[in-house]
Length: 162
Image (cartoon, rainbow, N blue to C red; front, side, top):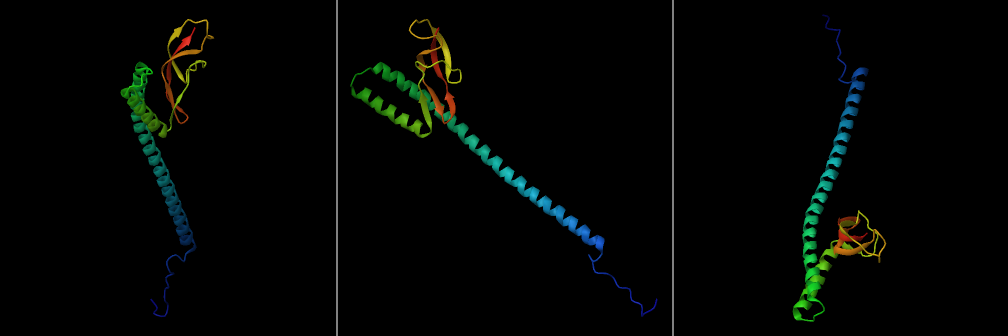
């Protein structure tokens, strides 16, 4: 080997094929990064939806229990009549307070008497023969129905004219 002849090595990455390979690898790594970022964002949104759904589901159960208490107050106040005893007045005050609590949660009762039977809003528990109302009209409301926002939380239990 001649000492005057030197073999020079080219610096890494100076070969045309090597540069292209590195660019392609960088592009793939960047795509993987963007995919991972999108996956994490989707995961975060899904967890948030599931958390909100679980909270609403738990709230739903509590509200349904409160509706049973409201129903009990309705029956108690019907039996108390128009008496002006302090017990009746106390019951009415508690009833109004409980109504405000459920209304603050977005719950609203809906009227059924005199309305046409709608299976999405009403649960028929019987029919009543009557000449006073047109067939299919709600003539008696046994249990009040409630909406929670746009959703029917509990359909009204009704009797319908034959």
